[in-house]
Image (cartoon, rainbow, N blue to C red):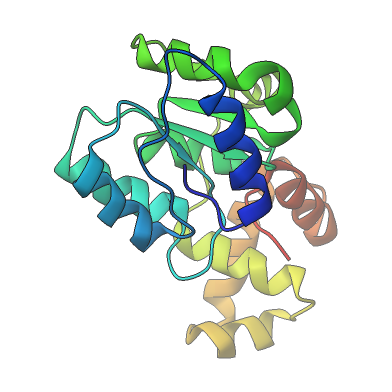
Length: 199
């Protein structure tokens, strides 16, 4: 069980320990601890938060899956957008569950993942399906969009990223097309809703 909120971790651990056929073998509060704990315990299922200090859940998943390709990782998060969900699945997660649904879904989701099935929150699956055919933003486009979200002009974004004004303009044009946005503000709002960027 990996989460940086001790209270949430305690609650989830208690719910799992109440099951006759489940036992929690380890806990971690960040990605680095998660990797060490995984190496030590080799759990059947790992529950992983995405946003944590020190090292994110995404980084931890990539490291764990690189060493242990058969690791079954179920993400527990508050992020509903397709951006974080796609990133988690690309990093090796086999499940993606919203924390708001844990009371009803957690135990069944653990059993599904343990049995080798994928488990993705229906609301998140719908978001992914809506955007699956779209070309994703590049890492540089996301950086430019993050600058726009912070209120930067093209010139300020260019200075911050060490690129030319023209290159920023080209990226903005591409961002608007990929997100089907009418203008920069619309692009930022769409990206925030989908979890592509955060402020």
